[in-house]
Length: 257
Ligand SMILES: NC(=O)C1=CN([C@@H]2O[C@H](COP(=O)(O)OP(=O)(O)OC[C@H]3O[C@@H](n4cnc5c(N)ncnc54)[C@H](OP(=O)(O)O)[C@@H]3O)[C@@H](O)[C@H]2O)C=CC1
Ligand SMILES: O=C(O)C1=N[C@H](C(=O)O)C[C@H](O)C1
Image 1 (cartoon, rainbow, N blue to C red):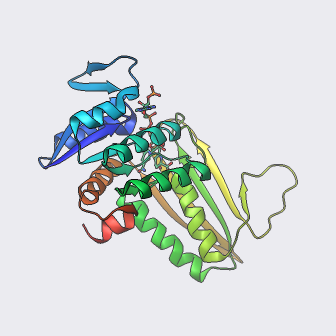
Image 2: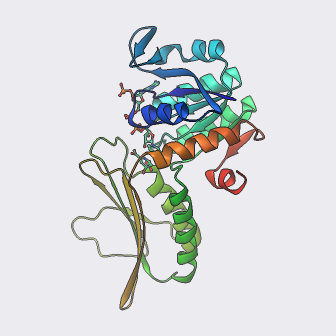
Image 3: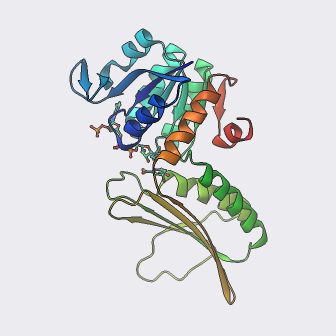
């Protein structure tokens, strides 16, 4: 049995993860944490603890792993609490700055805990990243654009998945210039274009477009349901409790579970 604590329990991802844990006999939800403004409160049939008590809640509930789907500033606090209490981590939150990422790396390293951090836990996106890398190797002279679309409530842009895709393209193509959107006089150079669409209830679309003389290729992933992310996060949770200390990728999880 793997005991799970969850931060962001009331959110779109958090509530789905609770449902998935309920239908998984090998997982047990021992703590659900979100902003509720008082100590503990029963919401639906889950007892939710207030985010300000995260340290205490982790000490008392003694989970094997903390899963975090919140916002960057909150995730930093939650990771700090997990590091302090020696709890393994699965972090799905996106939108971290470079500075926040280096603080996270340092906290995880000095605590000697294991963590899986990924901007996208779906199996499909992890295959999409491999396809993008493969295409980039053969289409190194083509223009490349990354287009993502998400629901109107998403807080960060571009998505974490789009930014990881840009990293892969940048490394494979040796292009450092990234152009976010275009307006005015902006003739294309050797750059990676990035475009973020926010509309309605789109779960998450990512497209990489390679265009060259007389043709183009589009590699596209579309999530139909957040359950693809929730299932992947739980697969990472089962894996990380047996993993060595350090920060691991979803690629490692998929390769050995
Ligand atoms: N890696 C992946 O596969 C995926 C990553 N994501 C990422 O996960 C994150 C959450 O997404 P989503 O569920 O849609 O967002 P939501 O806004 O629906 O959920 C976030 C929840 O976290 C709560 N929260 C804020 N601060 C804290 C805190 N200090 N401690 C505990 N909970 C807190 C929010 O409360 P309140 O609303 O009151 O502020 C909210 O209930 C985003 O960064 C998103 O990009 C999303 C899907 C897949
Ligand atoms: O906020 C979301 O919804 C999503 N966020 C992740 C991201 O920023 O890449 C993953 C997924 O696309 C859904």
